[in-house]
Length: 371
Image (cartoon, rainbow, N blue to C red; front, side, top):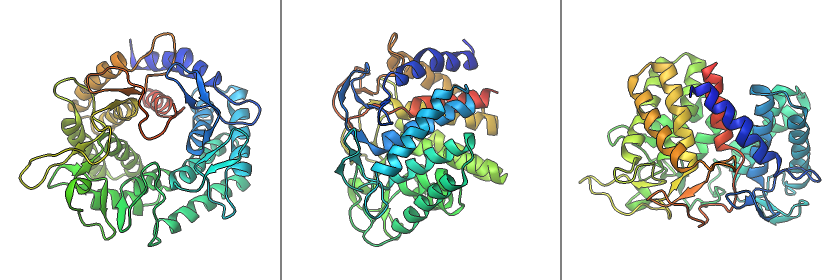
């Protein structure tokens, strides 16, 4: 099946029907605390899941099908987030009840960034200067907060003192479009001499000792690189595109399981002697759906921008493994968690949610590339 037909079918016959059944049509948002098959187990709402839904519904309108219910529910969810998911300082809380009562405070700037990301995509469909200013104000607050000495709000993994997390400039690359953030990623967190992107550095961007300082998240690195490639494409920077594409290749080569196939959630970069230990974060030997979806798009984007044959070779390899192991015929969405052998597991990894984001975003962006 051709790429265009496959991803159109995935959206039309799987992803869209699955998530439309999960919408909270009374308050806005989505019931994302669910089983793999879509059975709701809790009506609690994680803010970044709700914000990601805004992006996905808006992107479906902008990039796939102009169905009124997409924008209607996106706006209902924005209104819920702005009215009920902010604290007295204007920060977005991490988790609420269905109705919007706060259950967990502002422990993650990623929640704020995803709210802004969703609003940005919505405003492409429905230009709204006031709403666009809200998104800009959210990001201004985040940009200042992440530079404060006591910054630690990076849940689900809180940032210890005197640390920098790659995830911060990574997401700010995508949501702000500003030059400083991709340059931080490429010039600080990417370590060419070791062919890795490190997830954690000291506050002054030096390497940390031990397993923390050697931790690599291949899927995060790959996703980060397609953010960088899109930024570099806007600037016409062919050299940066080539650099980012090569970083994608490093993390597929290092993160691919040679025994069972699939991309590891985490790996240890090893020390000066090349010996690798146990990865820093739990569940690192798991195979999650999202690194594979990010790799599918990143590889097609890299091939589109560079013409390098290896991109298509790796795409076929990732595609075959992912569609074989994560697809759930008759359900519509992909299974999200597998053990190393590729068998389904029910353990919570990071958050107890099934998010309306990584797979639909990859499918939409791949279709955009396919023309």
